[in-house]
Length: 219
Image 1: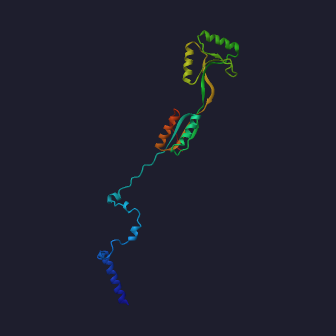
Image 2: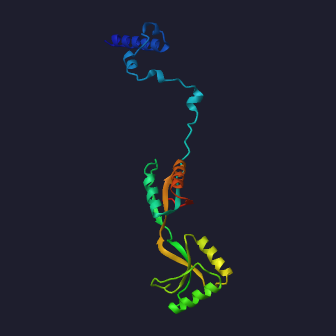
Image 3: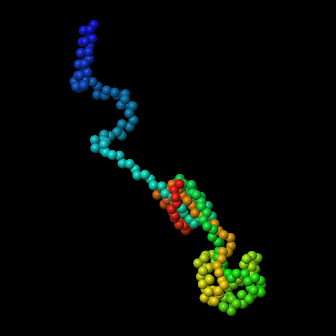
C-alpha cells in the first residue's frame, strides 16, 4: 500500500511539472473554459493597455466652484415675473427675495403750507411777479394744505432740474419731497450656482428689468 501511494505521488508531481512547463499544451483544447467566454458581455469593447497607459495617473476633475449672486433692483411685479421665469431654467436654486429700501412713486417740487388761503394767495402773487407760471395751490387736507405745488416728477433728476430752474428765477423757499405711495424694490438672491447658472440667471434678469449684479455670502 505504501508503495502504491508513493508511486501515485511521483506520477502526480510529474504531471504537474509537465503542465507547468507547457509540455502538455498540445494535448489541451484551445479554449479551456468555453462556457465562461460565452457569458462575457460586449467582448469587442475590451482593449489591451500598454504598461505606460495602465500606470498613468488618472486625471481628477477640478472641484466645481458654486457662487451666490444678488440681482436687483426689481419692482414687485418684476420680481414675481423673474421668479416665475426661473422655473423654466435648469437652475437648482430657490430664489430668496430681499426687500430693499422703499422709494417714492414720484417727486414733488413744492413750497410748504402757507397756513391759510390768504397766505397761499400772497405766495402765488409773489411767484407770478418772479415769472413763475406753472404752479397751483394744494387744496388736499394734510401737511401740504395751502402749500404751492411747482411740479410732480417721476425721477429725482427731473425734480432737481426743476428746482434749479426755480432758484434761477429767484424762488428761495421751494424744496423737493416724496409724492404718492411708496413703491417697494426687491433684490433676488440665488445660492449655489455654477458658472452656467450665473450666466443664465443674469441673462434672464436682463429681459425683465435693468438690474445690477452683486455678490452675496454663500449659505
